[in-house]
Image (cartoon, one colour):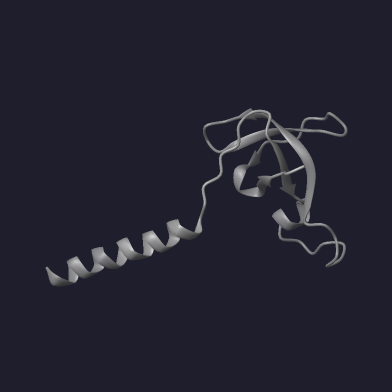
Length: 93
């Protein structure tokens, strides 16, 4: 009984520490975002270590409940493939 109580306290402490660090991000339609370049997402070696890690800006065109977003390029106006929200970050002008 005592071991179960200590395990529950440990799990609660770990969850609180994780939740302090990780900030949930949710984008809405029309938000400007940057997305991670393809070689970083695929964990492949890039052109060089000085190559940019982010590309964009993009505007969010569609928001899906599953955490995926459809983006449209600001410069070319082209639609991109669906992308998970973990590969996006807000773009500040």
